[in-house]
Image: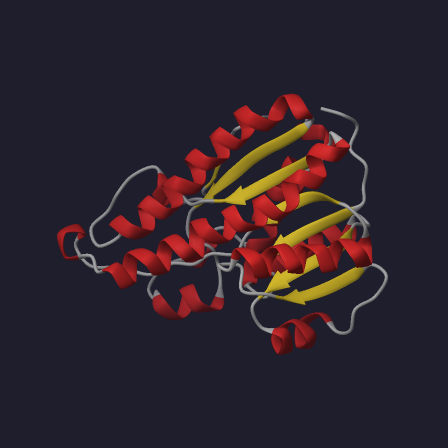
Length: 235
């Protein structure tokens, strides 16, 4: 991989618990941040006004044309994107596989796969032009094994993992590292509310997962290609 040039890091799902932790971690190492999420007001409330080091772009990442336009706006303000963190996504319990509705299937595939695909299509041509870059996708430990009423979710996260491996095979010789993380349960306010009897100390703190993502996007990880890295806490 060509030497990493610290320019701009793009983070999707920037308003979520993990997105905020990842943004803070990359900001701490001095990166410019292109922050993408679907809510302009929430982005402004969380991150404040745009600066020379940070631009917030509200965008429906399931819309390919809107994503292309959003990435162009960020690049115009901050310069070429050299790190892409595909964090946008989400979880929903579903029906049994034989009862899965189109609504459930499409919701999870759009949220977890289409967002990653659209952002990658918008960002990676710039990385190819520079022969440098790093992509870190967020899958899930659920990508490794199916569970009852989680078929659509597991399939969507497995798709992220397999696409990560394919992207790596396609891009590694062009100076671009592509890897993904497979976190177990994150320690978030939502998960604490949904699972009040669980022990959140066993879960993964968003800040700890952010540190793994920053490492995978750093020159120290230049020899790592196509890895699906488990981040399990003590689960």
